Length: 246
Image (cartoon, rainbow, N blue to C red; front, side, top):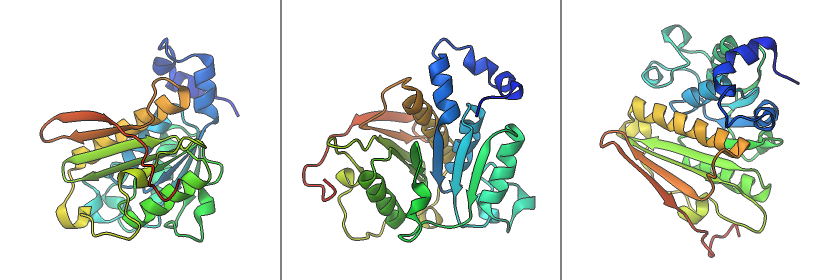
């Protein structure tokens, strides 16, 4: 698979940047990205990944579009209400780059279908579900698949990349060591800023590009953002020796 003339012209302003060598361009072209959750983070994330040269995208989400999604899930409009998120998102993304390959999986993840994550260059978890986040984290650790966890509640965003290299353990459970399910705030109960979700999507997209092309080291760095206060912090995270996934 190679970029078409259309794609090279579309991406020309990015590819003339001195940071984008042919080797880095090839990595963008050949990487397979899996996004779990086509919501407030997943929509801008997918949009900017396709617009940045990602050709192979897998979208996993079993939900349908609701009216309350429209303030932050920018791939959807009022005409899409009631339709499957992955299907509509795929159609919208294909309008940006008709030559990209998008696999739409109209299911939510559970223990029976985790094989959907196989073959991913990186998995990006944007779901609003702690149980799914733990399950995805464990699968990616066990199978040495790089994982970005990206979440937003209220005006606050948290984004972190786990390289999941063998013999170099650091995972979501190291930061939040909860074996049992806990009652965490959810967007449908405490609210979410559409702008915070959008910015989380953009930051996640850049971290993904940085990782895939080695533009910047992103491992072990927890990015915290509060859009209301304008606060942005990067915190270095260390492994938890007591993590049960070690």
